[in-house]
Image (cartoon, rainbow, N blue to C red):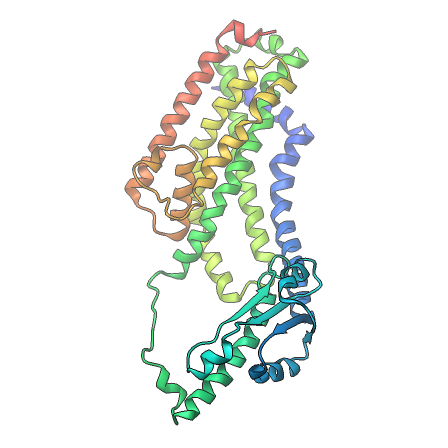
Length: 397
């Protein structure tokens, strides 16, 4: 055991001297999310403010009977009426940003109103740049016009507006706030920390295998009193530690990003603080340990097989897609933790994290997840040990 710890300390010291490892494992996870939250918040606020304050250029194609609609538009300080736009050119004008919106009344609009039926008005807009703000502003004008027409129709029959209301709907959501927001946070959280877990383990694994070959130090290490198994376990422990540390730091960075977001309501912040409680985070981190061992066995095996650092990167880099894919599947609505998904590596961690954060995890299914991860980790470690014992692999040239 002392020999393994000696190798572990030596390899960990060498790994921490590598600037790329420190940047990947600590700097990026800590700074990434606060920066992302800050930039996205400022850009979102700026774009929303521009969209709300922008004076909309709008054209209207309507019959003379729609005089009330023109009156409403004339009272809107934030809307400019553009006349003389042909109906068949409206889409072109809006796509080219010469117009922001248009109202096209159906040819039979006035006739349908006289028949006390609903007239049809088509509203044109483009929401790609304004996040539906332009659409909502245009819709508000139509709603005002609709209220005027409705009041006139009700006055004709001496009726009140309340006459139209036949049912009062009261909805009651029995899900707790933690369940709702926990599902949201727990949905994308694994997508983040699983990637950083893989990335944090990847660079040390490449350096401890292919890097040693490239530097010509693997032979020196093999001639030491330590046997191959002890050498492998020492290297393996470094890969696992860096992977788990990187994932833990990414979770901490995400927490900092949430805490610094000033536009989050205080009530929501209290709920999120409950989601990030210590017991839940420790349970998530406990899932990461066998997952990282699983990653480490595969990464170290490929690294030992590679002839050089560059070849190891080429072999391992495509694996990022295989990690992202099951984590992304966990974001799909309707994909839940069951006895089948609990056996799928990465996906089971993603779904279990979602349930843990929401406080709704089934202990039996969580046990299946742990058991499957431990089995995969054991198989990965066994294969790595077998691979490392082959002369043709270690001294492959």
